[in-house]
Length: 199
Image (cartoon, rainbow, N blue to C red; front, side, top):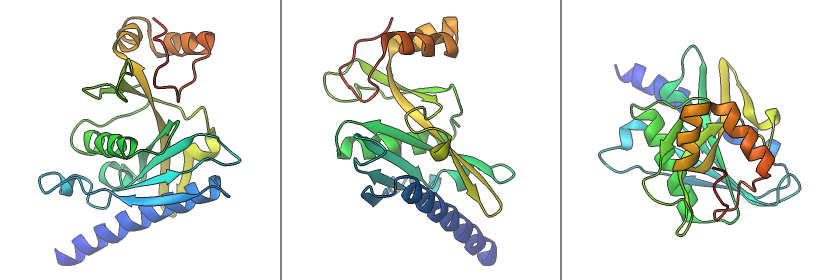
C-alpha cells in the first residue's frame, strides 16, 4: 500500500512538473511564478499537489495567465486529463483562488470538460457582471498551449472564460457555438472584467 501511494504521488508530481515545463516553454521570456495551493484540511486530499502557475505579460500576451498544475493526476483516464488556464488583466490573488476553486470543483466530484460551465457564486471581480466560468478552447493562446504531452499520456489545457448568468442561460438554449459567435460578433475583450453581457 505504501509503495502504491508513493508511486501515485510520484506520478502526480511528474505530471505537474511536465505541465510547468510546458507552460515555461510556451511562455518563454515571460515571468512564471509557482504558487502552491493548499485547499485546506477538509479538501487537501482532492488535489494534494495543486499549484497555480502565474505567468506575467510578455511577448506572447500583454495580460496575465493563471494555469493549474495538479488536476491531471486526479481525473486522468488512460493517461489523458485536463488542466485549466484563466487570463486576466492584472496579477491578483483573487485569480489564483479562482483557479484553486476550479481545480476543487473539477477534482472533487464535478468533473469539467469542454463546453461545461461552473458558477463562481459571486462576481469574477467586484463590480463585474461575470459570475460563471465557461470551459472553452484556449483561443488566446492556441493549440501550442492546449496540448501538453506527458511520457505516458497527454494533458489538455482548457480556458476558463468568465461569463455572465445570461450568457450561460443563452448557451443552454442555443448551444455553445451560438454563444461563441456572439462573443466574436461583439469582439469581447475576455480579460475585461467589466465587459457588457452579449445577451
